[in-house]
Image (cartoon, rainbow, N blue to C red; front, top):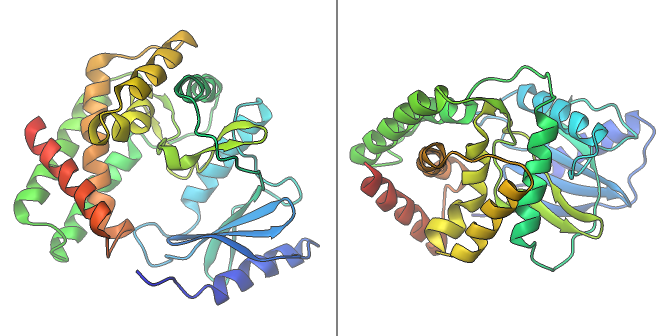
Length: 293
């Protein structure tokens, strides 16, 4: 997939900064996809939504993310904080929603399973005190609705769409009866950074109310079912429990199913031209979901 033209979203971000008296001294593109991630000063990163015509429009999701990130930061949770020099927003300029974060320095060392499990529990513990109203099981509901658009575009065979719809609807029923709290919503390894100041969670855009097992399933899914890395999975689960967390195995299993269905549904949106490795992972998810039916 060719990279997007970043001219206009970069202009939008720099003009918002200028309106708040901040002059960018660099423009390092850290990510160029659905979201454009820019380092614009020594300690400031902008995240700009480029896919303004995609399934999510407006600033509602960023508003939730900002509220959750602020709460976590104020309570000392292991997260990347919003940048203190600007109002939290979210901001919108030239049609691009955006928010601004403190730059942190990543290190090459892989995070330890025990640190992953314990920091996730720390975030969950802080999130229990969050009063921000959030939709229940939002990403699952959103994914079920997305299937109609995928059907119109012939993104999947009818049998795959029926498989995904069945799993998503059954997951809504089963997980809807579980205890709910505020969650990360998209707690995979790509949203976790090992930095010079420790392991930090990022990207709270998908936050919603649901069972904690959803986040646990999200962080172990690849290791458990794609890589069969049982040591990592067991280490994360043990650390989460040792920190004080409770995991219901039946709810975890249903969350693994729901996570696979959600990721599959979003593949045509996130990866319209997937490479061979992404196609392989997609096929493995679909085959696993077939077994779960």
